[in-house]
Amino acid sequence: MKIAVFCSGRGTNLQAIIEAVKCGEIKAEIALVISDNRDAYALVRAKEAGIETLVIEPKDFPTRKDFEKEIIKHLERKKIDLICLAGFMRMLSPDFVQRYRNRILNIHPALLPSFKGTQGVKDALEYGVKITGPTVHFVDEKVDHGPIILQAAVEVRDDDTEETLAERIHQEEHRIYPQAIKLFVEGRLKIEGRRVKILNETNNK
Amino acid sequence: MKIAVFCSGRGTNLQAIIEAVKCGEIKAEIALVISDNRDAYALVRAKEAGIETLVIEPKDFPTRKDFEKEIIKHLERKKIDLICLAGFMRMLSPDFVQRYRNRILNIHPALLPSFKGTQGVKDALEYGVKITGPTVHFVDEKVDHGPIILQAAVEVRDDDTEETLAERIHQEEHRIYPQAIKLFVEGRLKIEGRRVKILNETNNK
Image (cartoon, rainbow over all chains, first blue to last red; front, side, top):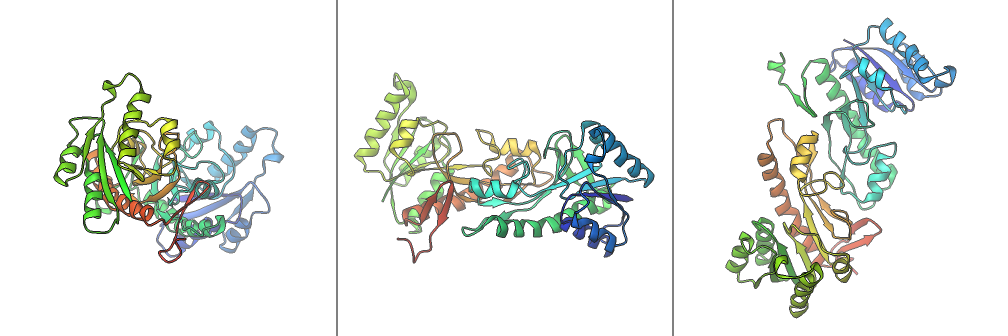
């Protein structure tokens, strides 16, 4: 199975996925890392791991459709089975999502459906929740909305700042994102409406 | 310190509070249990514990204002310091909330701000979250909205029904609601905007 990881930034989740592949936990190949930002440090990580990288920047295309067409061309060239968004700061179009229906995963730094959007950690902290944590979910046409695969609980401490809280959430992200990808690759995720059930290793038919 | 508990139903959280008072964990008196429903089993539990009970039903009053006036009369008669809503299925008016500002607690069976309203367990299950759990919060003018005191994480299992999930959430409710009341009674809750900080036993000045 071939995976493409889409990144815009530091790529710490990419790093966690790279390591899970390297140690054999995820039995698949990361065939491509695509960034919409040529300065993303994720590109350095990918190159260091010997993974093909592509910078595809929206500004180089007249429309989003053309931008995504370019992405799709490379996904097809590499015969990609699974797309993992890892800090990819861009909405995919409904057409794109439909083409890769149930084959795009995303990670969000809050317990969805709470605190959607780009400030999941900050918003949770300001709201004053005592429990937050990351969510791995399938991507559908709406922002941070598709069926949930895994979540992890992170306690908010009284003295937390956005930075200290984000740090503990990221630790959990790096644990559950590779775990969710492993389950996908092993064919153990069964979507029933909005619920995602996890099949045992023995009955994954 | 004197506590009034408002109930509409079975009163399992009331029971947990009664027991925490009885064993000395909460150093306060439950001086009054008020129900808006004469058939609430909570009334039986209160009587068995030797607590004064009152049935105050909205249908016996021309307006909500009159209904609440009757409640307030008894709260003042008993010199109540803290109101704990425990399965009380009725909105309190902004006037009432203002009168007892930061002295009304509520428990909700979901991780607020997710799944507000009367079907917090069912809605969480249908949404497909993997982590849910109860929230104890101060009551403000909006439904299920005030500053959060404590939350607990409960894992949703693939084979959960509303009943099995509710059962595990209730267990956590019965643990964190008395704990939150204890913190209130000991003067250890400090509200800063939307965040509630918990003071140590030693620095609760």
